[in-house]
Amino acid sequence: MAKEKFDASPLAAKLVEGFTLGDAGVVGSPDNLLEQFIQDSGSELTVESVKQSQQLIANFVDTATLAFGRASIGFFQKDKTLESTETKIKVGNDKLRIAMTRSAEVDVGEKRSVKYGQTKVQYLVSGGSNVGSMKKIRQTLNDEAASALAK
Image 1 (tube, helix red, strand yellow):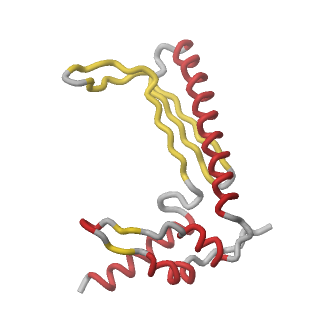
Image 2: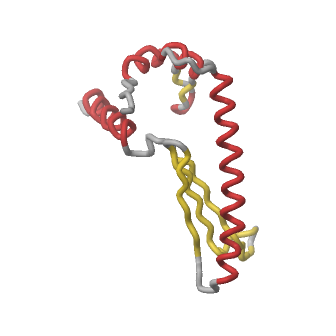
Image 3: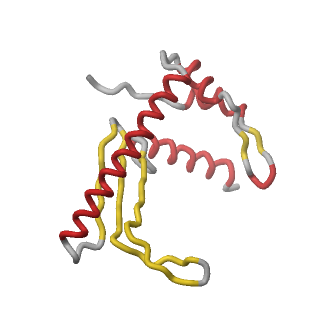
């Protein structure tokens, strides 16, 4: 079944009024923004069901990171020349990227120390930073900003 295209523009036009400019460019957003989005989008989800899904994913990320890290430690023990490991795991339409380095020098106060098993975890939503619908949204914002600001 083909994925239905989502047009963010009409809902964004409704939600834009809820943002307020504060000090030093900090923009406030309404506490109920997600609830308002869910209601206006016609979704059958609730804020509670979204929170349950987020908790499940958070638990999955924790578990996958721990499992990957333990596997990586074993790989480092077996291969003394291996400096780092990395994996990408599909999470529905999203991706979980986990990397571990064997060791790295870090500053601890005024001293340098070696830290083993440096781990980096990234959770990338399906829009990613510049792919799919997010790529189109970023380009739209670039065009709108150029039109409004480059005068």
